[in-house]
Image 1 (cartoon, rainbow, N blue to C red):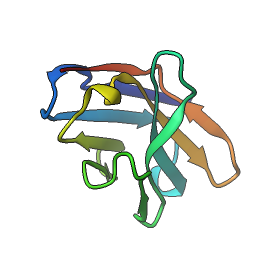
Image 2 (tube, helix red, strand yellow):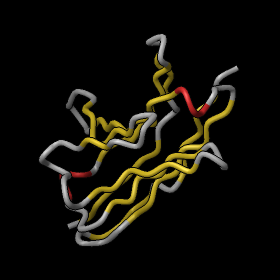
Image 3 (cartoon, helix red, strand yellow):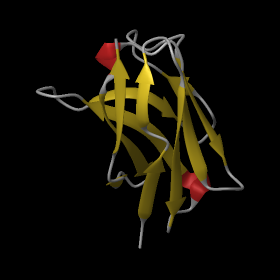
Length: 116
């Protein structure tokens, strides 16, 4: 059974930092691409960071230079380091794993709240 468990969310002041973790189980880590998405109040879910099997990363302009995605193959964990946080980064953050066959799995989400 595939499980993605996020942790590390919380309340932080604007300008602060948080690191989210996503522990994956039930998947072959070397065949996955992983990503972090977020959904704020009244908004659609959007991609904030992705990392491919080969380690290539992608970010939208809204977080580029502030967010960094990384993965630890030994721990089967993917991370999202968030710095210079803004109130508009407030959202529920979801971990996503996509297999080479195209199947996508989601974590349960972790709340990030940035106060001004």
